[in-house]
Length: 296
Length: 247
Image (cartoon, rainbow over all chains, first blue to last red; front, side, top):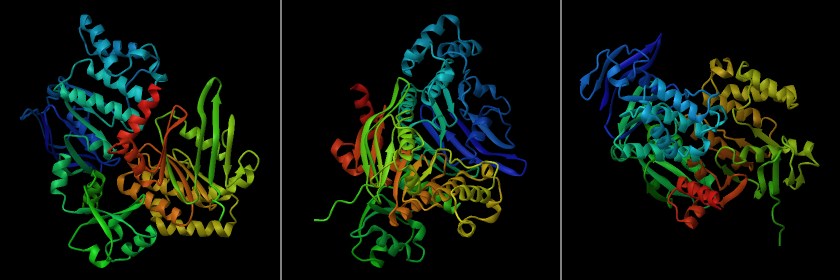
């Protein structure tokens, strides 16, 4: 639906976005993930014309939009990282205000508001001041304000950052329902376990796209293998023995009662330390992110 | 028959009221010496309130907290020497450099100057000097977190309470941080870690899930998954909280 081709942006000497090419598919969830400063917010701001790109092309349905960002903004709802809510207004007053500035026709407003409040579970809090809402509820209200205009494309910049795990889970249920209604969603998150839920995952570091694919595609093309080692005896002694093997120190880490080992080459840990009980497991997105980050 | 090892932390029927609001509702749990226990729950579940009552920073409404068998209301001075607390947001002075923070917190912890110098030298071995010379507000979150843990560990506490230590930290720094926590466990330290990252439950020996001031699940992560027939911690967490909410 929307794509960036070779897009770059610098702020003074800092290259915030470096030759990024990525595609946002229709009726799917695309998730950009990476550490703070990776360039995720800058990409979103360039998509909606809030930040001017230095070079590259932004396409909508295969056509270069040139400098006509209204082609994107007219079909999208953008939720910035810091929710733009009026904290002294109630939930309902915020919805009324945003419906007015988005020129939602008056006859539709009540029905839309009712539907959005029900969908987000906010109906009991309609009279509560936005400033008195929890982080999770603020996030749902902010999402509701951008859904008032029924956008086809929904851009969410770190909507779940700093929000507790239950609210994050609930938020994602809403996002998936929107996708099932045919909405196109592009969002960013620093939580890699959350990013795994995307249909298309874009791993970003220092303004560059390291990899992009579905979780299954990322796993299929991942060049390393992950093993769970079940140590017999003292886990710290086993860990010390493995870490002492030259080149392996950075490839093992403890996780509870297990040691996880990333085999990146032809090394054979089982041969170097006999009688190790090793079970292969699927790499997590965190494993893959760390692997590609180290090689960037 | 040898006597059972004394628990590092024993929380019994602990409650906390703020006016008419009961933030913690008579919870009980123990943490064994050398154990890493994860404390999970939504915002407002009572995690930070419980941790603050354990440290003695917050007055207990009812119930008891024993640290190594000592009641924290009767032996607070002795207990403070055993406990290290790394709060949410790391509690460092943003306009001081890493080294100035270390010097300041070492000073108020009463560390002798020679020992403090040793700690500072140790930090210089771990982090590049140009980063250590920057204001702590300007360094990457992973470094801030490292300095905050370092500061917390300087008085060599036996029991370490960490309140959301990995929030906002990138994946590699988070893994390195957990390596440090395992290093502490290896040396017999006891850790109670609250977190919003559900995947970190797997890093813990046991987890406690708390909701609306009550414990809704407690046990080894794998065992809990098996008992409840769940495939991952997110499912376990969501169901435990939803079931509790319906009761």
